[in-house]
Each structure stands twice: as structure tokens, then as C-alpha cells.
Length: 183
Image 1: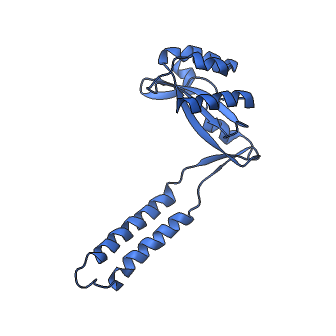
Image 2: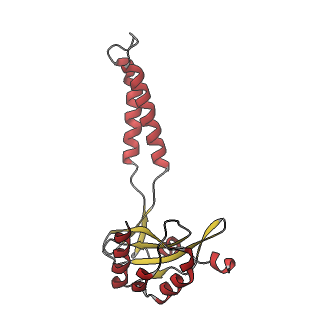
Image 3: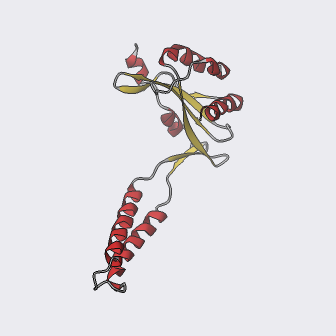
């Protein structure tokens, strides 16, 4: 197989990153929830001594400390781990990623169909339960922006088998119907 040629193809994410910011932009969730969790965690730890029965060895004081530490940890981790989302700017719609799994023997046919833009023929391909060959679809919910790319498992890594392809709204609706049917 031509692994050297396959590995150089940009992913859908790289294509979206290179689009104009008036078309697609990246965003991350706000850190406000994380900060609230940190404040609640600190408050629970600080107020545990103020609780009735704290000096009598009750269960409420240690519980407040444990809850406070958990909230504090959750808040700190949530600040640093925030998932990046792509937004289609004209409609302010999120771009959602889906995967359709196909039998590995269908690789050449799947790549050919996607390069030709013949998404109606995808229904004839044999699907699979394993993820050795997948069609990644990135689309807005209404299909106004849609990209797809074939990703194949070539021993020890997944590689892009074709260029990310932009689809028309009609093709996008067909792909989204397939995604819904396979869920």
C-alpha cells in the first residue's frame, strides 16, 4: 500500500482550521463553571469546621472535606481540559463529527465513491462493526456545511485514505440520513 502518500493528506480538522474565520471558527467552553466548582470546593473545605458536630467526630465534617476536595479537583481539571468545538459562522451552528464503519475490503470502492461524490452508492457497501475502515463526516445539523474523509487502519495507525471532500447540501442530507440510520 502507498502509506507514504496516504499519511500526507490533511485531516478534516486541518481543512476546517485553514478556512476563513468568517466561515468556520473554533471555540472552547467558558471556564465559569470550572471557577464555580473551585470556589464551592474551597468553601466546603473551609466551612467543614463550622458545621455542627464537627468536633464530636461526626460524619458530616469528613464528608464536607471529601466533597470539597472532589469539587476542587474537578474544577481544576475542567479548566485545562476543555473540548474544542468548530462552529459554522454564517448560521452559528456547531459542526458535529460522525463515523460510518465499513468492511475493510470495501476500501478502494469507498475511496472511489467519495472522490466522485457518489454518496448514494454508499448504501450498497458492506458495513462493519470494527473500525478498520471508517468514513468520518463533519457536518452542521442542517447539512449546510459538510466534509467527509475516508480513514483506514494501516498497521499501528489510522491514516487518511483520501482528501477531505466538501459536499453539497443534497449530498450532506444523504450522509446524515445514513448516520441516523446506523445509530
